[in-house]
Image 1: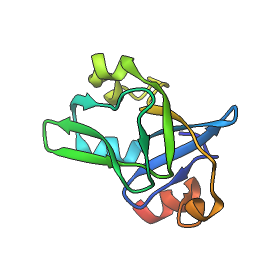
Image 2: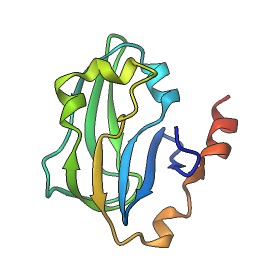
Image 3: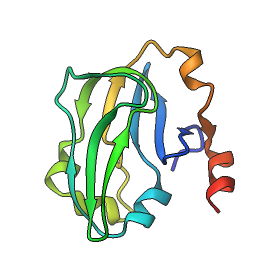
Image 4: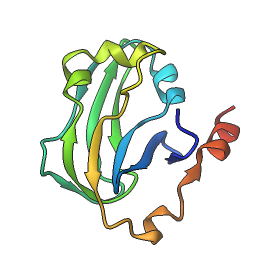
Length: 124
């Protein structure tokens, strides 16, 4: 995981990349879910507000809703994990992001996000 990412208390992350943002779930969340067998992601051009459900993920243990850490418009979907959700279980797999969004980056929306180091301390 990238040390520059910001995390929610519900285990989503957002990471600024080239003026846009990658959104996904943390390695901790993946470990807690167990073997992931299904991922449902939104369509490109979908818009979400912070806190809205944007994805569903299922493992052999449970199904979980994934929430937007910040508001934004989907500009890319990681089709690779939709087609092969088991890739998320592979620690060497690097492209664990779910969607890429464009966002105004409203600083108020970032206020309750945790730096990755603080997030790690909280979940350990």
